[in-house]
Amino acid sequence: MSEPGTGEFYYDDLIDLVCADESGVEVGTVVAVENFGAGDLLEIKPKNSESFYLPYRDEYVLAVSDTITVKDYEMFLS
Image 1 (cartoon, helix red, strand yellow):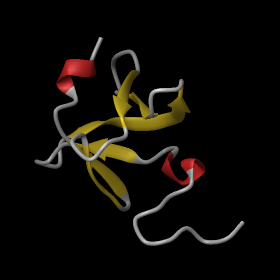
Image 2: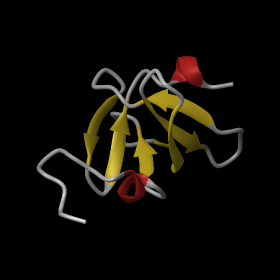
Image 3: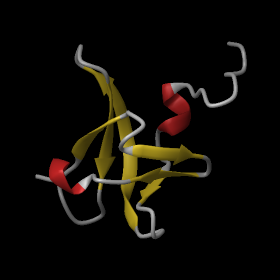
């Protein structure tokens, strides 16, 4: 496989990354990346609750580096 371009990632690269909000508070860890036909979804598993799906779109995923910075995720919690 070739190296992804700037701002691009392979799904496998996102698995096990920690997601944090804009304040740096940990939200959970990515356990899977799914696509059921309406777009890519990050499955995020908080430490003490059920996993939830967060759309992998610019309005929810702000940055990806060693961690994934997310916002407005609360509406997707079970």
